[in-house]
Amino acid sequence: MTPSPSPTSSLPGIALGGAALGNLFAPVAEADAQGLLHTAWADGCRHFDTAPHYGHGLSEHRLGHALRGQPRDGFVLSSKVGRVLTPSAQVPREQHGYVDGLPFVQHWDFSAAGIRRSVEDSLQRLGLARLDTAYLHDIDATTQGAHAPQVLRQVLDEALPALRQLQREGLVGAIGLGVNDHQIVLDVLRHADLDTLLLAGRYTLLDHSALPALLPECQRRGVRVALGGLFNSGLLATGTRQGTPTFNYAPAAQAWVARTAHIEDLCDAHGVPLRAAALQFARAHPAVHTLVLGARHVDEWHDGLAMLRHPIPAVFWAALRRAGLLPEEAPTP
Image 1 (tube, rainbow, N blue to C red):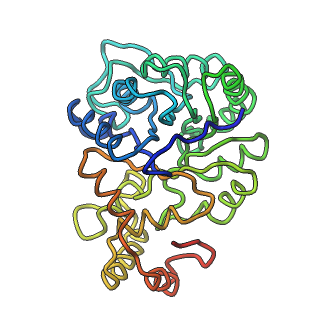
Image 2 (spheres, rainbow, N blue to C red; image 1 turned 90 degrees about the vertical axis):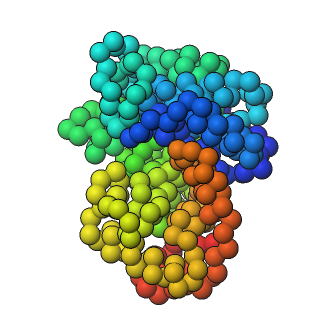
């Protein structure tokens, strides 16, 4: 089964990411969440990404509420598998960075039965009959720790075959990985085929680690690539001149701060907002099919769209290369 075709959209190649809709780090009021979703739809967005992890089902619940009244073939919806949620009356206010989520706790389950349950539970929360894309979530060594080799084996032996079966049944369309690490994708591709990939933070204006091997391999094999984490969790959004810069959800190492400061200086010299450079750089690689824009409220969403449209002169990209801030082989707009 091939990936579902994208519906007509006035924002092709742009998806709204649903992590903030799960109350990542701070609550988002229900009215604000629905306002953001309705605004994105009105702006022409027809691609939405979520996960059980995001607010322990809250993000899926909110997306389902907003999308159920729309024609099902009129949008693309992706969610993730590998974490199963169970109800609990004693959940803490904060779990895994999400606050005031739904009353569930999560546990890993990459078994065939766990994958089926994960998909079916997501469909229940969404109130929909299929996912257009199902991503195996966070199977990398950083997340899984000492269990990573066993997780990879189970992904190959059980999880991916289970997703292919669900694909044949029509419950999911495309299948792939949703990860923050490029190496685990290469490890999986040595043994299995994927339809798609959601890669967060590993191909950005700062971090080019997916460029040498992974993106060319995806092109060669026809794996459609969506990019998330386009601001590396903050550093490329706020820059170095205010607050405490973050990179990968932690205080940024000095090397990343210094590199970003150098980029900021060149942005200033050419009249280019840092956020515009970050988004437009990520979109320029031919392997990239979709950019996932995370937004907490309408203003952030509209800022992202404005940054994608902001004119950037070719001399700016040339200046970044001369300064050693971009690899020679990295495509630019």
